[in-house]
Amino acid sequence: MKTTEVPQDAALLEQHREVTYAVDEQGRYVLVPSAGWDPANLANRQAWKHIADQIQEALKAVQSGQASPLLFHMRRHQMDVSLLASYTGLFRWQVRRHLRPAPWKKLSSKVKERYARLFGMAPEALDELPREILLPVELTDEGETL
View 1 (tube, rainbow, N blue to C red):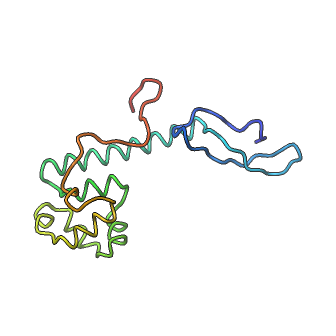
View 2: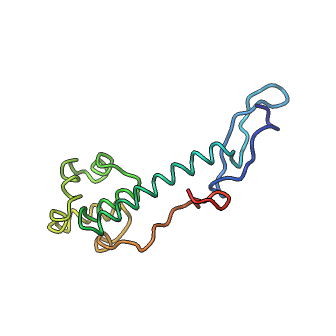
């Protein structure tokens, strides 16, 4: 693709730019900033929709008493059990256990502090759930909700 052919479609994240390789007038590969292109925007929008669905499912599970608030925070930060265990220095079986409501309620303040520090919040805030889920992108495309 030539530097003049690099797509400049409306980006999903307006403030961010992608960098694409293109061929300049001398035939060399150069980096060219791109606002985005529709196929990538569609794929990213679908990925964010999937993330939003996972967060919503986690929120419902917590509200219905099937899971602890840790599940919501884990999903909101796009983590899985292995990653969360790695970042907190806990074993995976411990994190899985903490995802259940009963063990979560008995959890020591020291362990909750680890989770809170990782998520950048106060330990008391771990038990609070938001009214609505805020994402860094708008999940609509030309008036159509995905």
